[in-house]
Length: 324
Ligand code: ATP
Image 1 (cartoon, rainbow, N blue to C red):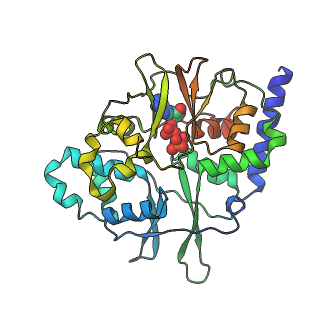
Image 2: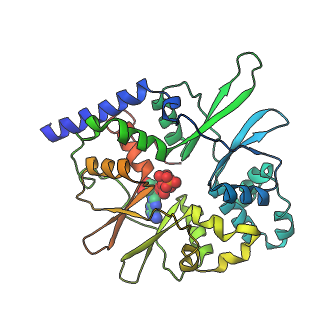
């Protein structure tokens, strides 16, 4: 094994050991707010609450049984849009749907129902990460159980973003050993990329996100130059106030509705080393990186799950579990 390989493995091992001795509690900020939505709430209203509070997801609570009932994310709204498209005659009912109907909507449009995995906040962070990655969830709720009453409490939700940031900020001595380039470790997706044009309709892009089970699509021009990235969360302002018709608008029009504090998109190149990717994660609000060449041509996409999977499982037995 070359010295650079050895160092890389040493770095990976260091991060894994760190994740095993830390718990999910450690990732949480000292003080935070958590908005939990009742499962009986109308979907339409839940959308307004997300927008008003400037959040993109929330845990659901089943008040009849006093239990955690899953997570509401932008994917759920995308599913409602799909439902409306497949069953236009149901538009009046769509208005009346409650959050508890989301699972029926998934069944009706035939999308894979996500397992509602959760983890106890006191368990090792490594466990929260691997459960999240294996279930293909992008965030995992921390659910505690009261010893006396046996009732569940949703403590918080941790995301891939927050975990990767936590790793980047706290384990620089280990991540700085990861000097292999993303090309050398084959990190990210480079073939069969889903892309779109500024003039494509939002609806078409949503379709490709649902079919491919992805949450971001690079926007390119006719020369394959990257102009922007359309993200699943960009759908939320489009359907504000139940304006499902607005989805006929173009990607360009939808992107113009982004909030002023939108952090922008992040790029990298195939010759960038993993330690420099961690540096970007440490310093910025990165949700994915678009891999480009010197002239901004699209080469690939590097998602947070790609990075986390590599960090957790590379070189381990059964490294890459089947993608379901
Ligand atoms: P999130 O972006 O919400 O954090 P994630 O990290 O799982 O979620 P996804 O965008 O869902 O990212 O990516 C899942 C897999 O699909 C990754 O391996 C990623 O490289 C790949 N992928 C992401 N976007 C595209 C795309 N536009 N075309 C092809 N593959 C993609």
